[in-house]
Amino acid sequence: MNIHFFKVMVASEVHLDFAPLICSEMEASARARGTGIAKRSHEYLQQKMLEGKAVIAFSLEGEWAGFCYIETWSHGQYVANSGLIVSPNFRKSGLARQIKHSIFELSRTKYPESKIFGLTTGLAVMKINSELGYEPVTYSELTSDDAFWAGCQSCVNFDILMSKERKNCLCTAMLYEPLQEATHSQDYTHAKHGS
Image (cartoon, rainbow, N blue to C red; front, side, top):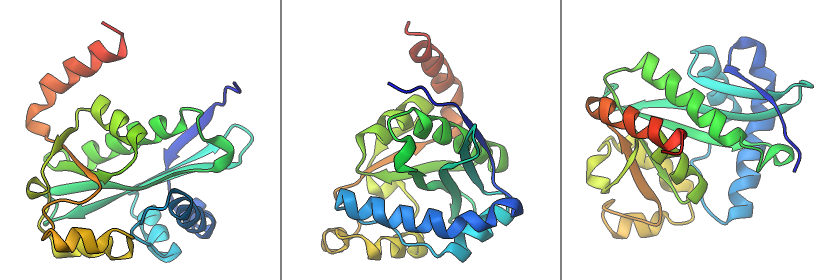
């Protein structure tokens, strides 16, 4: 197995030109998995970069390797780490975990009081979320912000979501609550050190 090392950083204006590539990779990945993804324009991703609400990763040789961004809902009460993507050249390298950890820390820094949540069908993402202290929850514990749920419209499973009145779907809902941080950080330390 090739071991890759990466530079993961907060994205900024110097990374704007990567947005179209990131968008096309997100769409290709969703098509390959047969799942939907909330489609975002490259202008939207560029705005996230300009706001300091995204992380971007590069190989040590400077090749684009991955990306993820922050969205806020319900007036900042809820935060989602969205659009996680790893370039096909660097999948299965542990980079997704590095990016998830970086975007989680950025979210905690920018929004220390906010609940952080996600919807995913990916087992690997669920495992990483669990490491970070997320727990599976019902959809009723997520934001009720209509703008968030509107993002699901481009998903192939949107009809299922709506037929169940946004109470469940094929995605697993996971939530991190900052009030339980002390317990989670202890659990994470034990898990990280294998004890």
